[in-house]
Image 1 (tube, rainbow, N blue to C red):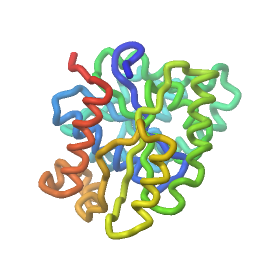
Image 2 (cartoon, rainbow, N blue to C red):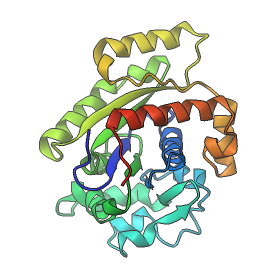
Image 3 (cartoon, one colour):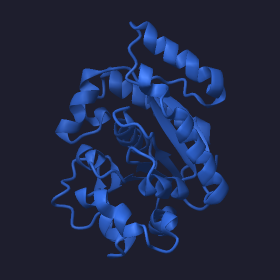
Length: 261
C-alpha cells in the first residue's frame, strides 16, 4: 500500500462501537511518533475520545474538525501539536454534521479536501472514525489509502463485518479506487476463553492474508491511560498494552513499507 500523494492516510474503522477503535488510533499514532515519523491524528468521532486521549480539551480547542467541515479557516489552523503527535480535535457538534453535509455538492469528499493540503507535512495521517456507516464514515473512507479494522474477540465481532467490507468495496468502486483493507486487528483478547480463539479462527477463514499477527490483549493500564490524557506508551511504557501497540506499530511500518521523508 502506498499513499496517493504525500502522507499515507489510514482510517481506523468499524461500524460497531466499543471494539478498541479509538484506543488503536491513539496508540498507533503515538507509536509512530515515537518511531520518528511525522503523524497527524484526526479525531472524526463526535465522542472526541481520541482528542482527550491526546491531552487536548475539546472545550479549549479554538478550531476543530467540525469548524473545518463548515468551511471555517485553513486546515492547518486546527492542528494542535502535542508530544504524542499532532491532532485535529473533534467536537460534539460533529454529531449533527451529516445534516450540514447532506445537501453539499460532492459531500463525500469534504474530509479529503481538508486533509489533502496537509499531506506534505506528514508521513502518516490516522483517522479515528465514528461507529456506524453514515456520511462521516464515507468521508473518512474516501479520504483514506487504507482501512484498519479492529475486531473485539467476542461473539458479536462478526456481526456486521460483511457489511463493513461491502461498504469499503462500494467506496472503492464509486469514490476512491485506491482504497484497500490495510488489515484486521484483534483487540481485547482474553486467551482464557474458547470464544476468543473461535472468533480468530472464523475471521481467518475469510481474511487470512489481511490479519495482523499482533493481538491486543486486555490490559488495565491500557484502559487507564485515556483518563490521564496520555497514550499508553507515555502512561506506562512497560505495560502489556504498551508492548502490544509497539509491536503493532512495527508490524504496520513493515506492512505498508513506511518511509520517513
